[in-house]
Amino acid sequence: MIMCEKCGAESEGGATCPRCGAALPAYRSAKALALASGIIGTVCGLAASVELIVDFARSGHFGWSLVGLASSALGWILIGFPMLTYRKPGLFLPVMGAAALAYLWALDALTGASGWFLPLALPIALSAMASGTLSTLLCLKASRRGPNIGAFALFGCVLACLAVDAITSLHSSGAMSLTWSAIVAAAALPVAFLLLGLQARLRQPVPQPSLANSSSK
Image 1 (cartoon, rainbow, N blue to C red):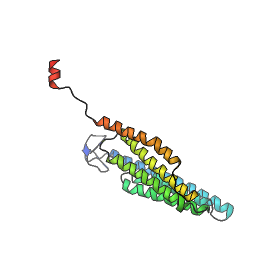
Image 2: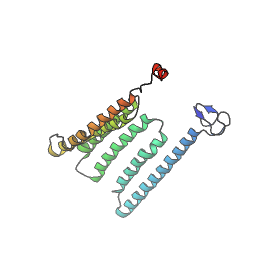
Image 3: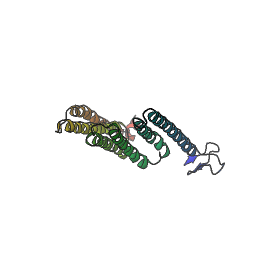
Image 4: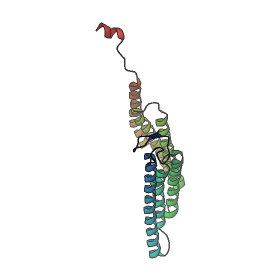
């Protein structure tokens, strides 16, 4: 239920209050976020346009400005797009992930490097996304939230570090090995289990004094 700030009437939603016709807070917030998203999009578009014009004016073709164009597009998708779809995380989160992967691919293609997207960037990005998704799901599924949130975050970080270490070692030496990530895991996992134990202690009910003891006193 949404309460009108002007008359105090409650409603299930909508743009205006059914009693007095004033704009409801949620509607004003959505309009403000849409305006902010439009401003961010305009700024990103102007910046990309200036870069394209300067690049073409100086060289007669588009080179480095394409990287700026891709960066501006990614910036709006990561900042402005969630403002429009903040009520639909199932929509903006996959779009943000796909945009990040597309940006890495564009950087690899535009910079003319040695093709690092497929062997390095793609698996590392997917591993990081999977670890973050797992930590988020554990947080959402938790019946009570407290120190266990820190434990879930540590689990995700450890998984991401193990994946990055394995992928980079396989790319550089041709053999998958765990070096620095094992140290990270050895340091982080005991803290994570300690936080889970603390959460379990917090969930235990506090013993209440019995009626007989209180009456004897």
